Image (cartoon, rainbow, N blue to C red):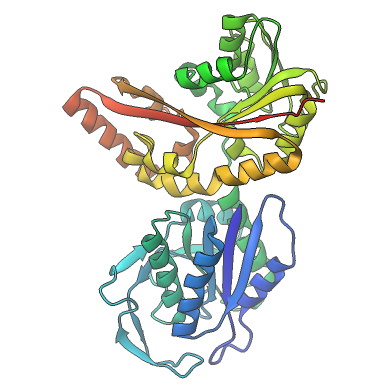
Length: 440
C-alpha cells in the first residue's frame, strides 16, 4: 500500500518543526507492506499547495496524511474540516499575508477528512497518547494544504483516505509531547490505514456462518476455469467457515484442504456436510505439502494480508506444474459501486479502498513470483433482499470499519427502502484473478 506523508519546514517562531522530524524519521524506516512517500513541504501557501497537488497526481497514493504543528495544543489533533479560506495576519515563509482569501475560487466551502479518524482516536487513546478531534485546522498553510489535497482528489474522482493531523510542539511537559510519542502516534495511524481496525474473526464466526453464502458466478468459474474434477486436489487459503470448499467438494468429489488463522471459523468449517480437511495456518505458511495441488484459491481474503507477495509465493509452492491460482477480490470500481454497502454505507468506501490492493499491483506481483497466463474475469449477481439480517448483524467486515453512527444511518436507509419497496437491491460483483504455474 502506498501512503503519501507530508510535514512542514520551520516557520516564524517555530525554529524546529516536529512534523518535519516525524516525516524524516519515518522516511528512514521500513514498514512491511507499506510504501511511504515522504516530503517536507515549504511553509508557503502557493508553493505548498502546488506541491501537494503535484505529489498526489504524480504518485497516485492510496492514502494521504498531512502533518503540521500547533504549538499551543497538548494532544494529537485529528482535523475534521478543511475550509476554503486563507486568513491570518502572520506571513508565510515567502512573506505572503492572506486576509479572508478563498483558496480555490468557486471551490467547495469545506471538505471533510476521509481518514478513519474515529479509529485513529481509539487506537491512540488505547496507547495512552493524548488525542482529540479538531474542527479547526486554522487559516494558515496547514489548512491550505489540507484543502488543496482534498480538492485535487475530488477533481480526480479518487475517494481515498485523506486528511490532516496536527501535532503539538516538542516537550516533556504539556503542552508539548516527546518526539518519540508523536512518531509512535503517526506510525499507529499509518498502520491503521493499511490494516484497518482489529476485526476479531473468532468473535464474528457466529455471524458469518449463517449469513455468508457462495456466489454462483464465483463457484462456476472455480469449477470451469479451475478444471475441478473428482481427481483434483484443491486448497483454499482463508477458508473461513468453509462454504466454498464444502461446495466444491460436494459438487465434484475432489479432495479439499482449508487453511484459516481463526479457530472459531475452522470450528464452523468442520461442521460443513462435505468431507473437507481444515487446519490452522496463514497465507504465507500453510504447512501443506508442496507441488501437489491442482487449484489454490482465496475468496475475499487478499485485503486482509500484509504481504501479498508472500501469499503468491506460498501458492506457487503448493501448486503442481500447470496448476492454477485464483484470487477472488474487489476492484476499485466495484468498491465504489457496491450495493448496498457503498450506496447505503458510503463511509465504507474510503477504508475499503485503503485496504484492498489494486488489481494491477496484484498482477505485477504474480508475474514477479513466476505465474504465467495471468488474466481476470468479473462475475455479477443481482438479488432482491427481503431480509437484511446479515447487515443488521454486521456480517460484512466493512461494517466494522465505520463509526457506529454511520452504521446506524446506513441501516436506517436500508430499513426505509425495505419498507417502501419491499426489497433492497443487492449487486454482488467480484474480480477473479487467475494465473498458472508454468508446466515443467
